[in-house]
Length: 187
Image (cartoon, rainbow, N blue to C red):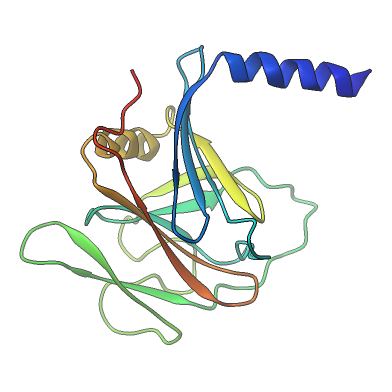
């Protein structure tokens, strides 16, 4: 009986939602969904073509065009969980010019001088973060109630691409580019 109730709830929620999905060349999926309640959600799922999963102790970075990247951090976490290994990869960024735009430059195993994240899930200077429900193969968050998430939604209205940078549990660094449709909007 509980399975039947869950199925009916899923079907009714699906009928109430509008969405658009983007698939990258590697099969990764980005979906923006508006529920009938008006809430917007953004979800990213890794491809089921392989066994990749997000490393729980490494950053997931989301960047729109050349804007400053945002770190997707895990939301609430149980105190009973085991401590995660420390971050092992260093993510370097450099300004793309004299302006305020930033561009993902490289991922290095060794820290370098300049703007970078130093062995933490936060940067040296006000690195914007978004709290998300992070699982091994996907993450999602509501694009409301968090200043950075709402800013991300506003930026998406004019962006041409979304870049996702992450590290897998097998210590492979990956970069995925989603090309946004024009216009990439929900009414």
